Image 1 (cartoon, rainbow, N blue to C red):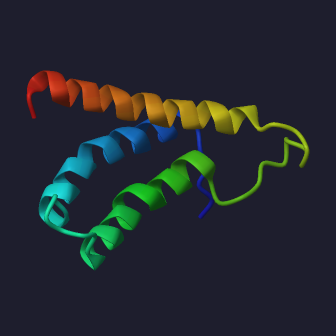
Image 2: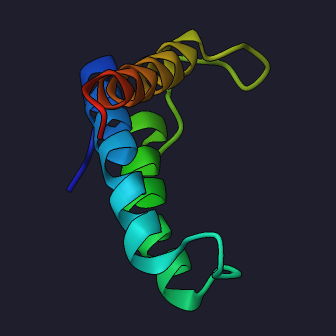
Image 3: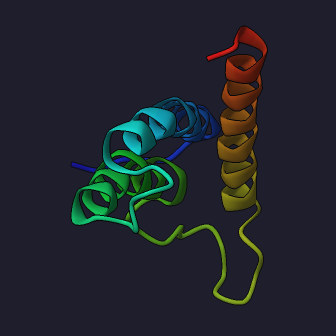
Length: 96
């Protein structure tokens, strides 16, 4: 299966990551925990893997030469961060 990352998929991954992180932290983390195995696995599965799949992708873009800057990747990273910031701001305004 070939997953082609787009700015929309990157934004969705950022929104899911920002929405899920407080629940992961409350369930497996917290100030008293020093980073348990469950928190690491949950972070990898819920945040890192979707971010890699939907922002970076699993293959190199053929359109960009090895020495050139991949502007499409930078746009997807920006969409991922913007969506995560928007969800975080909405959660803060809503008092969650």
